[in-house]
Structures are given as C-alpha cells and as structure tokens.
Amino acid sequence: MLALSGIEKRFGALTALTEIDLEVASGDVLGIIGPNGSGKTTLLNIVTGTYAPSGGCISFQGTDITGWKGHRITRLGVARTFQNIRLFPTMTVFQNVWAAQHSRVSGGLLGLLRSTPTRTRGEAGRVEKVLEQVGLLRDREVLARNLSLPARRRLEVARTLAVDAKLVLLDEPAGGMTPAETADMARLIREVVAPGRTCVVIEHKMALIAGVCTRLCVLDFGRKIAEGLPDQVLADAKVREIYLGTEDGLDA
Ligand SMILES: Nc1ncnc2c1ncn2[C@@H]1O[C@H](COP(=O)(O)OP(=O)(O)OP(=O)(O)O)[C@@H](O)[C@H]1O
Ligand SMILES: [Mg+2]
Image (tube, rainbow, N blue to C red; front, side, top):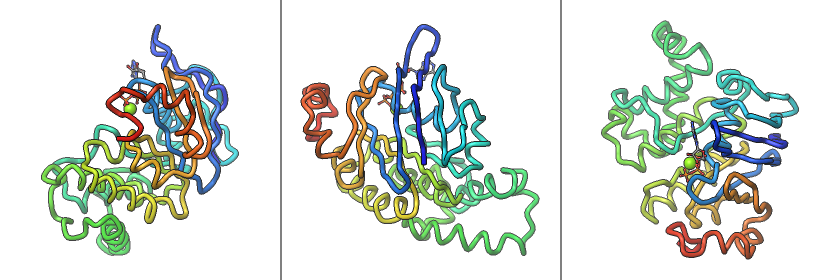
C-alpha cells in the first residue's frame, strides 16, 4: 500500500537518506529502528509530505504522491504522531481530538468555528468513542498541557484515530515512558491502532517493537541495512553490532 523507491534526502551538504527502497503491505505494522540521526524521522517526514525527497518516488495505494504537499497526502488517509508531541496545549483533550477530526472533514480550525450544534453531535460521539479507546474519556475536559507524558502521547494517537487514516505513522510513541507505560502503549497499538490499518512505528524500545511489529527495518547513516521479520532482523550480526554498547541497546 506504501512503496518507496530510491528515496534520497539531502539537507544542504548533509545526506540524511540514501537509496531507500521500502514496501509496506496493507495491514503490516512496520517498525523502523536505527541510531540517533540515522534518518528515521526524516523518512516519516517524506512520507507525509513535510519534506519533498531530493530523489526517488513514493506511491501510496497505487498513486504516485512524490512531491505532493502534506495536506493532500493527509486527505488520502495518512495520519501521524510526532516525536516532540504536537498538541494544542491550552485546548482540552476533547477539543484536541475534535480539531483533528475537523482538519479532515471540514477545513481545519475555521471549519471547527463554523460548525453547527446539530451537525456536530454525531461528531462529538465519535470523539468520545476515540477517547474511550485510548483510555482518556475521563480526562476529556483536562487541558492537554496538564496531562502526563504518557497521556499526551495517547492523545496524539487518538488524533490519528479520529481521521479515518488508512496509514498511521507513529514517531517514538513510547518516547520517555517507563516499561509499564511502554507496555500500555504497545497494547494500544496492537489492539486499537493496528487492526484495520497499516502502521509504521519508529521506536527504540525493543519491548514495543517485539510485541507490535510484523516487520522491521533498520536504518544506519541514512541507509537501510536490514529488513524482514523482527526476530530475523534482531538476530542479524550487523544490526547487533550497531546497537551493541549504545544506550538504546537491543536488550533494553
Ligand atoms: N530540517 C532539517 N534540516 C537540516 N538537517 C536535518 C533536518 N532534519 C533532519 N536533519 C538531519 O538529518 C539527519 C537525520 O535526522 P532524523 O531526525 O531523521 O534522525 P532520527 O533517526 O529520527 O534520529 P532520532 O533517533 O534522534 O530521532 C540528522 O543528521 C539531522 O540532523
Ligand atoms: Mg527521530
């Protein structure tokens, strides 16, 4: 459903991605791992249209989307979360999800302001359902800035669930979390996000990768150095060498 072919990305003199070929099949949960600065987030930014690639092409469900602007790609059913959480901090949990839903159905925040009470009742029900799925319904009136870090990450996931995404891209969804919180996030991805959707998950934590991903891809210095079933990839000598002795060690 998603295919990257020969993707290159340069930032001035710096080459962030080189010759990336990657296919994600419908229903897959593809994990992307790699050391800091290896190009993981840049790859997501290219898929979402945040950056245009310097070379290569991307197709989504058979459509060539190379060079498309982000909002057009979003409209095709691509949603994401951010490594550095991006919420509306002074809006409530409910409003954050509602705004995400409106960004898809009726033209962003302007649409939100113009919406009528009758039209929005069904939409409010949908927001509540999504909040229930991520375990935030009780916190619906809490301002996003007052949530704990795990709750903020769950709220970002909720925003992707609110937009009927076919492809969900998660950038370190368990970043900064304890092992117990990471296990909760892994369960949320496995039981709520992944069913009926295709996912790409950037993550360092093996507890999350192992429990969630159907395939795994490893980046190093902007190149894909391994790809396949998670067990096979994690047993690969080259992959182990890259991770050995780093703070993101494979057994962490
Ligand atoms: N907008 C940008 N302008 C210039 N350089 C950038 C930009 N975005 C990323 N880079 C560079 O591209 C390289 C890859 O960065 P990227 O953020 O994709 O890595 P990452 O694998 O996500 O790392 P981390 O694990 O730290 O999140 C880095 O050298 C980074 O400094
Ligand atoms: Mg990153």
